[in-house]
Amino acid sequence: MAYYWDDGGIWYVQPFRFVVRWKLILDAPADQWIGGVGPERDHVSKSEPLTLPFVRNAMADAFPVFLNKSAKMAPYLSAPYRDLNTSIVQRFRCSLVQIQIPDTKGRHIDLAPFPDSIDDCGVVHFKDNDRPEYHRIKDEKTKPDIVVLCTGYKQVFPFWNNQQEHSDWNGKPYPTAADANVRDIWRRDDPSIGFIGFVRPSLGAIPPISEMQAQLWILQIAAPARIRRPLGVDDETHYRLKPATNARIQYGVEHESYVYQLALDMNSALGFQEVISLGYSYDWRFPLVWTLSANLNAKFRVRGPWATDSAKAAMTGEMWTMIKRRRLFFDHFLLSIMPMMIFGPVMLLVYLYSSLVLAAQMGGNRIRTIASMPAQEKRHLRGVRRTAGVVSL
Image (cartoon, rainbow, N blue to C red):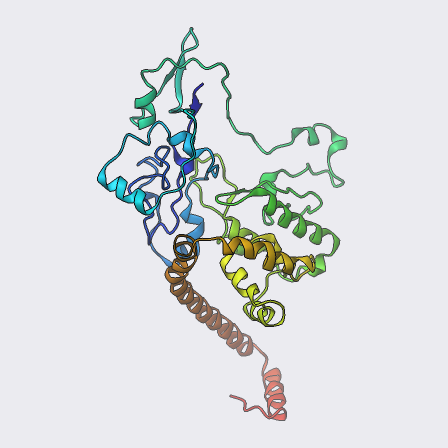
């Protein structure tokens, strides 16, 4: 049986694209020997210049493809190719970075380009894309028993609007997922219908995202006054992926940034001082777990409308156990400490820059407001300031 593979693009992880190159000889992750990103997709032209807006959207731009995270599948993909490259460089690399390779007992998964045609005898002829997958399978007679057409789907529900009585109360048709313009959950003029789990994370998971989406949607319906900040589109740039204009998936998000934005909307995200104080009052491990772990949903159940006492216990229990079993260099240093060293100063500069711009804008608005006051109100304001002991400028 032949398995179709989409030019290898869904197996490549390339974070910190404009600073660090994690390629380690191959175009695929360590110890995956096939299915890397092709040169037509892994090119400097696919990245934006290093500007402040780019730094702001660094994580959204770092993953130009959606990733296949099935690590158990990788040994079966690499099995036919692992012995083809036994150079000194590869042996040296394997001595430094080598995952445990399970015994596949002779079984493997064949990769192939997209089929060009299927002849009358049922034999598949593949397109020549000059990749290793093609050169290995081109001389084989591939006659699959079953062909699965992975064509994707559209997020529409025509059966909701096929009759007049199926329209909502004001005669408008039901919204679709593409109409959800508030955090990709509901349409701004109709929050009664929520689309839960209709976004695609680049590196993450849909179920925990769905939980956070359901929390915000229910809060908007049951207690909208608890949402104390406007859910504007200006907050979407840091988590929304920027796909090509012809890409099928236009609703990709960066998992970490997206769930944090939902937590901010619900006032469920702890501040720095709160995290430190919980380290003193509750458990010294709490700040470490908060810093070294991903944005798991338990972080955003410590406070806010969905707070629960078990959240802190989960963080210092299960999440702490997960952090303890990480390796010091390859996990803590390369994945946590070094990114902080690289992006920390950059983010600090961006924060200072944005703070100065915001302060200048607020000061300018205040000056314009006072300047536009009638003379009588200006005299009254000066009198109030003198009464309060404030020197009027």
